[in-house]
Amino acid sequence: MGMGTIKRAALGSTAAVLAFGGGVCAAHAGSFAPHEQSTYFLGTSFAGTAAGGVLSSMFWNPAAVGQFDGINSDSSYSLILPDSEITATGGALYGTGSSRSSGNIGDTAVLLSSYYSYQINDQFVLGLGVNAPFGLVTDGKFDWDGAQLARESRIITYNFTPTVAYRITPGVTIGAGLQIEYMDAQLRSAIGSPFGPTGAIKGDDVAVGFTAGILFNPAAGTTIGLGFRSKVEHDLEGTFHINGVPVTNDISANVDLPEIATLSLRQDLAPDWTLLGSVEWTNWSRLPQLQVFCENAGPPACPGAGVPLETLPLNWEDGWLFSAGLEHKYNEQVTLRGGLAWEKSPIQTAEGRTLRVPDSDRFWLSAGASYQYSQWTTFDFAYAHLWGEDATTIQGTGPGGVPLLVGDVETSVDIVSVGVRSKLDWLLGVQ
Image (cartoon, rainbow, N blue to C red; front, side, top):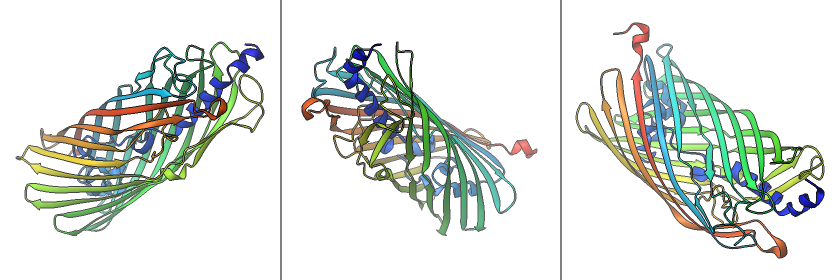
């Protein structure tokens, strides 16, 4: 590719960089932090998450591990069916593609999570969580109007959290854990025009963080939990390349994934009825902007080492989730539950609402059930539907200060989840 072609692709290169910034730092649950870490709590719209009751509560509060004797496991399998569409209404890229609409950019995804506990003695219980606390998969029409800003996004994290809980008294338990997290980002955009070659940015990193929490029972039938997940600072290193171009640029980007604090209540109302509630805060406001840096100079896009390819203003606010749920023990084997929630997105401006993550405030409505198959095994089932508020996106700056793209956003999601909780004391020879 000659320099003339590179110059003609300048707008597309800028778009690719903007897409990288938006994708790495924006997605679900106030960006790209999916809540669906437990089938049980999906059924309550995440009410009661940090107040224990089941082992998967340890994702929100590591002290919950201390509620379990012997050996236990809790695994969830969630099918996420998003329907998210962006319709271009203006901007420099309006009318340049084969379609004004992105189509459904939300790819179907399966989210897996597993938790394990092992009681050492009367005071100490060990735990391990394995899950994906951050992730994003979006894929619009190949040559729609916004293809120069986003063709495909794939962000994956794998998080391993060894945990220990300590029973201070019969009514107070504390816990802490170490987060070991791998992050991989692969983001693709059209170069030069919606029909042009694909520019791709790839980067990965391993980073660490921690969890901490407390669980206490101030009265019979009342459990209160407070859990905290620390920020995880990723220093992504990778490359930018264009299909058909034999050279690449080395790039880097610092991404600080946010702290999450959760306060939850579990309150017995009657022998067969339990009230659950949660308030969750996510510190997305720590991301006023995101920069992608060149690590070397040269084509196809880097003017010099250490020079920002692009600075993307985000101006996100903190994310909040408020949820309430009710659980009913129908009989000795079957327990029913339901919940609703309102989630305040950290993205409150059209400029911060990227094409890769067109996030907005949303409502959750959930239902779930548990079936105790035996003294060793319980199956969980849950369904949730969420409605995202209709919103607008305004992305980038084109010639003469005109936005690159203006569009309308419509979003909804259906989630189906199945889980299994097992007591594994038979591994110790307990019958």
